[in-house]
Image 1 (cartoon, rainbow, N blue to C red):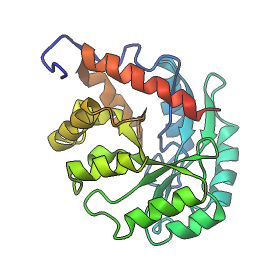
Image 2 (cartoon, rainbow, N blue to C red):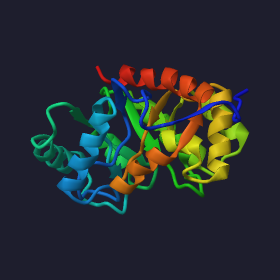
Image 3 (cartoon, rainbow, N blue to C red):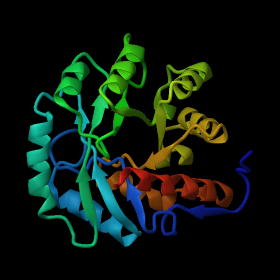
Image 4 (cartoon, helix red, strand yellow):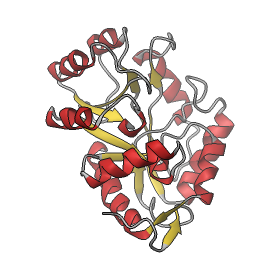
Amino acid sequence: MFNWWCTRRNILPGDLLVNRIDIHTHLLPGVDDGVKTEEEALAILQLLATHGVKKVFCTPHVMTDLVKNHSGYLKARFREFQKLCPVNIELRLAAEYMLDEHFLCHLKEGLLAFDKKHVLLETSYLDAPPNMERLLYETTLYGYQPILAHPERYLYMEPENYTLLKERNCKFQLNLLSVAGYYGKEVQYRSKDLLRKGYYDFIGSDIHHLKQYKSYYSLSLPLSLIKTLKALIRKNEELWI
C-alpha cells in the first residue's frame, strides 16, 4: 500500500519525465478542445523538452461533434505543424477516439494508432456507451489493441467494470495529474486503487493547455509513488516502434 504521508517531491522540477515519451496530448493546434494556437503548442513542447521529454504523441479527439477530425484531415494538419516542431523533441500522430455512434465508421476507415496496433479510446465521464462491449470487440476484430484513456475519470464505473475490462485484455492509460488530485478526490482515489491493483499499462499527461502544464509545478507526490510511476512511464516506450 502506498504511504501518502512519506517524503514528497514536486512532479516538476524532477527527473520523472527525463528521456521519456508522452503518449497522450492535445497539442495539435485548433483541432479540438486542446491548444488553439501554434505559439501555445510550441511553448508547451519547449517546456516538455526542458523537463526531459524526448518524444510526444499528438492525440487529438475524434468524435461526433468534431466533424472534420478524420484521419486525412488530421494527418495534413500534423504534417504542417511538424515542420515547426523544436529540433530537440520528436512528434508522432495518433488519436483519442470517443466510443460513440460514429466510431465504427472511423474503425472501418482505419484508426490513427500508436504503432499501427494500439489505439487510444475514451467514453463519456458520466455514462457508458450502451454498446461499449461490442465496440471494444469490433476494435479487436480489426486487429487493434484497445487502450482505455484515463479510466479513473469514468465515474460510472464500478470496481467490477474495471476488472472485467482487464480480463478482456483492455489496456489502461493513467493521467499523471489524476494521482495528484488535479481532477478531484474521487478520481485521485480511483487512480490510486487501480495502481495498487496493477491495472495500468501506460501513462500520459493528457495536456490541453499551457495553464494545465504549469500546474505541475505546484503538485507533489510521495517518493514511493514516484518510483511506481517511473516504472510505468517506461512502458510508454513499447508504443514508439
